Image (cartoon, rainbow, N blue to C red; front, side, top):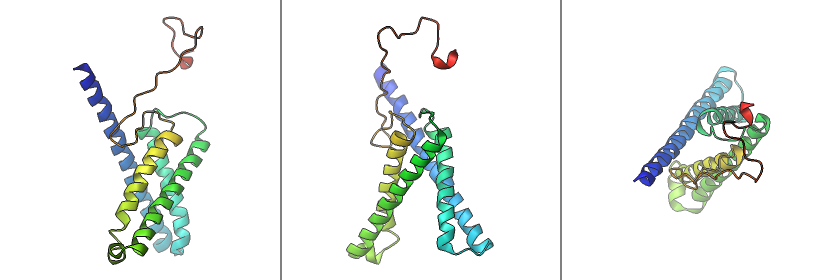
Amino acid sequence: MAQGRLRAIIETRALRRWLSFGAAGMVAFGVDMGVLGVLVHGLGMVALRARLISIPMAASTAWMINRRFTFVSGDDRARWHQWLRYLAVNTINVSVNYGGYVGLVSATAIGAAHPLISVVPGALLGLWGNYLLAGRWVFRDPSVGLLPFHTRPALAPKIRPGKARAAGRGGPRSR
């Protein structure tokens, strides 16, 4: 009975993390569209150049939200390196997304006839890959599973003999 309850709690956390990741993506989409709109319509910038500004701003927004709310158990290394890893993951995501789109539109009759529908498979694959790579590589969260609603069992920390803390003392941050 207790195992079933623990599994439900873990799966609820995984669902919350997935929903938080999706919400960060939606906010980033809004930033992308807002910045693009201001640059193109407000400042008269060429759309392709404006996109080179709006995409990194959106990705940076998503990184900040995911760092704060989605993957709170991630490592606390230098933020600069983490941000660069997040941008690299997003570059991979764009490549997968766009590659899938080009493949469907250029190689299938359905894709050519319905180019808007052809966005969906690449977007879903990119979203999954982005979640997995961001969770495991960028934020170093070992509990991120292959499926969004699944959590890998947390890895127990290994304590070397003679390094165990005395009873009543906390970890390195409590000193």
